[in-house]
Image (cartoon, rainbow, N blue to C red):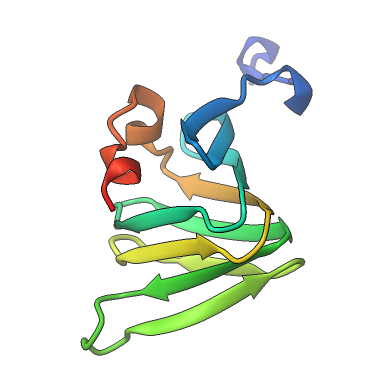
Length: 127
């Protein structure tokens, strides 16, 4: 593998994108995966959505309340993911989240979230 394909950056040098008044993120993307630092203020809502991407969420600090699946349907559940915990969300599973306190999480997506890269993630502005 050529060194020209290898990238190395400091998180402090990666632009912090303001998504909403209470959510910001930083993205580091490879060819087939994406790593995101997500910063949510207490009360921030990530509206219900789904995507083809598999998702790993690691709550570094804070807590997130997740609603997973469609209410009233088999498999629907609510979970609280706290500091030091990780959660896997399979492809195409609807989910919503609320920050129960100021929260910093690290999300891994495979493949990368194209909607995050091209700014078509309009679900953030639907309540």
